Length: 558
Image 1 (cartoon, rainbow, N blue to C red):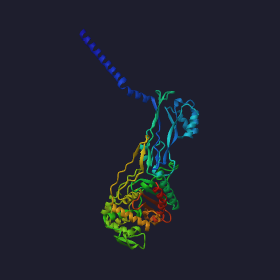
Image 2 (image 1 turned 180 degrees about the vertical axis):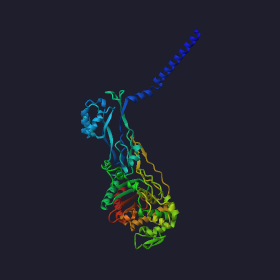
Image 3 (image 1 turned 60 degrees about the horizontal axis):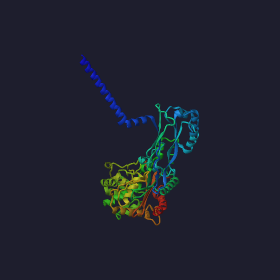
Image 4 (image 1 turned 60 degrees about the vertical axis):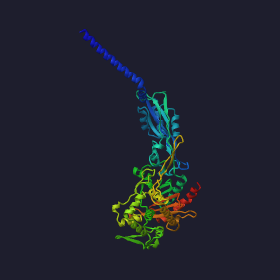
């Protein structure tokens, strides 16, 4: 019996020793191996963060002119357990921050570690709040986006929201690089989460975002915006857009879409979200339209590349062409008579291009559409690009092919049209339009935006011929109002109808480039629903001439 009791006692003792050993091992683990982890958890429990917004990277034009900056503002908060005069504090904050007293009083009385009252407060107001010296009132410096040029390039730059986040345009496209990394102020709190008086604070500094240097040119953008506003006012047009780009590499010098809006005041009272979205919309890339006779450049290149037409081929225009059971009219009712292909392009003669489309046929025409990249997007580094709207090939008969050939019944974006024509006259290489040049981080390191050389879409021979023909359009044809002495400008006019046709509303446009032999600048203007005279050669071509008169000497002297 005694042996049994002794054995039982030994087992209990052994279990106690094992239990104590396990407890000791666990304690050693917590104190040594897990100390850093639990110290961090305890710190997180007893620390509260007040975020310091990182300044967004600035945005510049290609010459270093500032387009988007940061203003110093303040965030005003209260720490409940430090406030000694809640009514006075609430009254002062309501007065200085122009807020309802009862609303502020509720926020001041709220039992939280820290309560934000208002952000994006003007620096002078923040300093004034601080000067009262009330306990428990915190004023932290912050950053707010500021656009020094107001509405200049508004639909390209976009804007940042109240929390300094990108909303539209380049601001949202390059959000990750522009936004930087937020910092914070860490304060110790008690078990209730209330900040401890006179406790030490830790500050983690914010890292500002990388600066963006764009391909935009402030001077060219300014000229274009002035020209667009002028023609919009003169013709009482609904909408005017202008794109100026380098047809060799796709760099965008200017992109205007009238009406623009003030980037510092993007929101308007009494405007619905639908109205605001319409106000912010960039018609150059978000909207499609019937491009009119400018698209005859694409039809011409397809025909010459396929070998179904040459400059000297003869055509006859009696003022119409019968296709199937339809009589399709030329814009010149009496007709152009006998003419060669070069003259047909200069006269923008519809029957000539109907004949050319029929020579190509549906299969070949649509193959060139694909070859020229017209179905996809351009890949421009701006959000919301729309795609080309085109007939389904299986539904295209002779009549549909005829109307497509002289540019009716399908829609394209202005940026797609400008990019495709650039690629057809620059030697035949497809380009990617872009606004980003390079980024520069806080240490001064440059990170370039790379764009791969595009594939060949037409031969150099066809490209050279096309540029030569378009030079004649300006020198001798419908684009003569864009001619400038001393320069070799090529281009094409266009006048198209909006839908429904019965409304008799038009879009006037002109595309021009210079020099014709090897273009370094290309511009496209579209004027939607002008009042009175609406022909592209009459109202759109002179605008591009005016822009070129200003920017061509400027570009040559750079």
